[in-house]
Image (cartoon, rainbow, N blue to C red; front, side):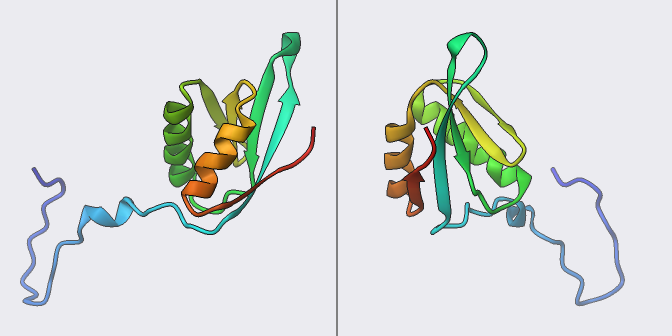
Length: 105
């Protein structure tokens, strides 16, 4: 079902495809993976340096969280993953074609 149907007398008029919104995550990004200790001694893995739209960031965060089997969120253009899964995240990102390096503590 199409939303917002437009009628036009212009013979060269074409309806824009909604497939343009599903752009892939840009490859070859230089990402840094940090560990941070939060409240009550909880450890969080932080992925910094992502270049892309907010929607792409959230979709990629969801994909990483599912592969790791943990929770997390997106804040300040950073992906926060619960737990110390830095090595697993680095291997996932490297397999996707990104340059991922551990950084910080």
